[in-house]
Length: 252
Image (tube, rainbow, N blue to C red):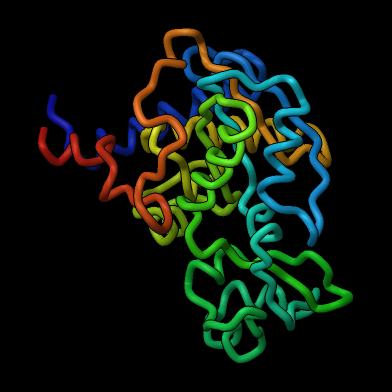
């Protein structure tokens, strides 16, 4: 029996996503051996130094650990605010790009992109305030890791996620389908499939508790030894077409 490369790739996405679900339910193994939720208050004055200090003060992180954060947290830290978002127009803004471009204003300049439209989130509808994705989420992930290493000496990997997922949105965001939660960025110590696994574990965990935007992942000892922990992969969003986890299927 022979299967197409696309079928095999999709099966691996499903496989790693299922392992993320199991981890989110508290039965993890390997890279997602143990997980813990951290409650972190985010506001317009938050920055990466403050986040790194919070992580250090938790006394929970060790060299080789991983954290996952929702993109909304990063967007607020980077002040990726847009004006014009209301409860009434939100649904149309996320389904009609032309409408979004006409009715929303990016506060730091620029035009709403298709990715921005997918990532649009309400944060204060009364003030017509929303956020869009970070401009360079892979760099954002690296900056968090770098700030933590500066004050702790420990290297960690970082995954930035978004709950928009599925066949079409996954392809629009990172070039391939995603399940439950999309890893829009990660540092270099994690491949695409591991980033997916952690993103799914994060979403399952976050749905169980409110106000816990950080997922701490403590890998099994053997999984702590990874190359390029905390380094930047490449600029922009995760891109399946640039990931070895995908490219190996093209070579098979």
